[in-house]
Amino acid sequence: MQDILYIRSSPRGADSISGQIADELVQRLMEQQPGSGLKLRDLATQPVPHIDALFASGTLKPAEQRSAAEVDALRLSDSLLEEVRQAQHIVVAAAMVNFSIPSTLKVWIDQLMRLGLAFHYTAEGPAGLLGGRRLYLVLARGSAYGPGRGDWDFQQSYLRKIFSFMGIDEQQLILIEPTLAGEDRAAEALASARARIAEITSQARAEA
Image (cartoon, rainbow, N blue to C red; front, side, top):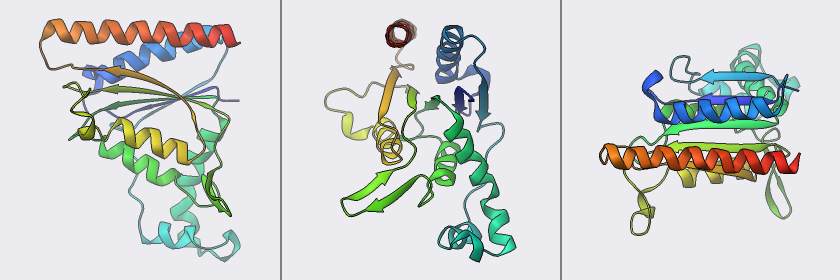
């Protein structure tokens, strides 16, 4: 099994705070699981393409009825879904961009959201098909979005909901906020995030 799937998405590259903290989390997870595999996808440096008309039409047909062009349009999506299926842990690092997530991360999610593969519909409503793995959301934002500002936070709420829709309900959250409110508060945010990593990994060790 490919134990850890690590998704980076911040456009800031090496300066990304979400990426720096997620790097530390991934390192701790790998230390706990010697020999574990790691798949890294940096969506900022290697973005996946937007879904298009061929993607949309292909997803609405049984596999045997798809044209060659539709099969080709879905090939990357199939590969991305397989990476998720092979992962025991999924680490997603995301900066807040305009109160939401980086567009590159949204496109990756669009590639995953396949009826019959990521979710399906039952008599009781939609049900996810990608459960059985643990999600770690490492989210950085320049301001704080506590009481009175939570309705501006479309980053955490969207990611929690969309992964839950796919059946990934076992979620851990690491928030780094605020990062742009002065050096002291940024340092406090980083220290809090690192304490959260220690808490999460200690819990995982106890459950092992």
